[in-house]
Amino acid sequence: MRIALVQQPATADLADNLARGLAAFDRAADAGADLVAYAELAFHPFYPQRHATPDLLAHAEAIPGPTVEAFQARCADRGVVCILNLFERDGDATYDTSPVIDADGALLGRSRMLHITEYEAFHEQGYYAPGDTGLPVYDTVAGRIGVAICYDRHYPEVMRGLALAGAEVVVVPQAGAVGEWPDGLYEAEMQVAAFQNGYVTALANRVGQEERLTFAGESFVCGPDGRVVARAGAGTEEILLADVDLTALADSHARRLFLRHRRPELYADWLAR
Image: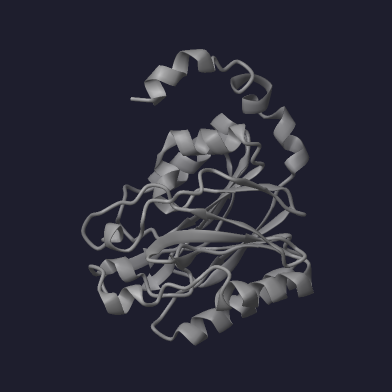
C-alpha cells in the first residue's frame, strides 16, 4: 500500500482550502497513492484556538455534505481511498469527525472523536460532543483502516481496540502545535502503538501559523516493528508518501505473540473502572 499524508495549511478562505485539498489528492493519486489522509479539521482554520461562538459553530457541515461529496467524486474518478477530517453537524450536535470514502466513492462510514480535551488554545469541549460511533474498522480496497482522531491516540484502549477489530492501518488526523509536547513524544507514542498492536500508524498533522498557534507538520508513518518509515518536514507544505507492506503484519511481534497471549478475562474489571 502507498499512503499519502497531506500536510497543508488552512486559512479563512474555505473554498481555497478545499480546492488545495482536492489538488493535493490528485497529486497523490498521480504519485500512485492507494490511501490519501488529511489532518484534523483540514479545510478550516483551527477554530478551538478560541472559545466557541454561534458564528464559529455555524461552520459545521453535514456528512454527507459538500466537502464529502466533492471527495466522493474524486475518489471514484481516481480509484483511491480517502480519510478526511471535518467539523460535522448532526442535528443540534457537532463533532470532530473523519469520514472514510472507498476507492469507488462509497461513504463507508464516519469515526467521531471519542475523547474531548480542554486547555489553553484547545477549547474543544465547546465545539465537539463526545463521539458515539465507537471504534469502527473499515474494509476498503486499500486494506482494513481504523481512525484515531488526535486526542484519542493518547488512550491505549483506543489503539488496542482498533487492533482487536482487525485494523491493518490506523490513521491519526492531528492538530499538533510547535512546542506543545516534548520533542519526539508524539512519534514515540505512535511507534509504541504500532509495535504493540501489529499495524501501521499514519499520523497526518496540520502545518502553518494561525491566530494563536503554529502547527508543526512533521507527519509520519510507522511500521508494525515500531520504526518510522517516512517523515514529513517541520513547517513544510507537502505530501508525504510511504510504502508499507501489509502482508508483513502477520510476522510482527504483536500478531505472533502479544495479541495471542492476551488474558482478557483478567482485564475486564480494570478497564471498567
